[in-house]
Image 1: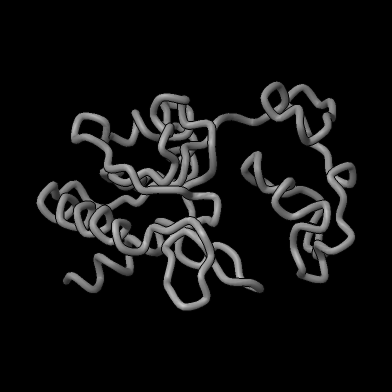
Image 2 (image 1 turned 135 degrees about the vertical axis):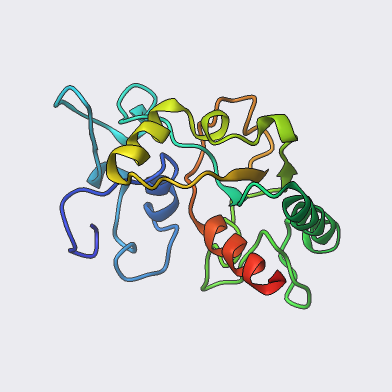
Length: 186
């Protein structure tokens, strides 16, 4: 949208803060101020970006890795990711070491969102699509695709994901990584 591709963008509530006010070096974000952006509310009114709690089109679940409902494979990948974060989960920058959660400038969000602090496996009883995404998001997915896949969500990048009612982020970068890892295991 900011690059001239349209007038409306559907983004998570943290995105405007992440790209405005000189926080990004890309040409399209350099002069972008938070007041340059506004929310379109369901009732037709507009609001400032910090008013997202009262003006939104719905809640979107936090970033999760997902896969088919094969518990053995999902548990293996989940254990691998949790084990990897013990070695590569540093949240401070070091030019000589790798971090799962930080990207070196000028890059951002290379593997996981730079806002992520840890991975948290979901218990088996919390892995249904309805519990993670919510009924309204599942309903919306079925409206646009009658072949909405059944999936088991299993690693949340937000440590308070389930207790805060999935108010952060979007299912995004994690899907590509999960598919890549599943392809490697096959």
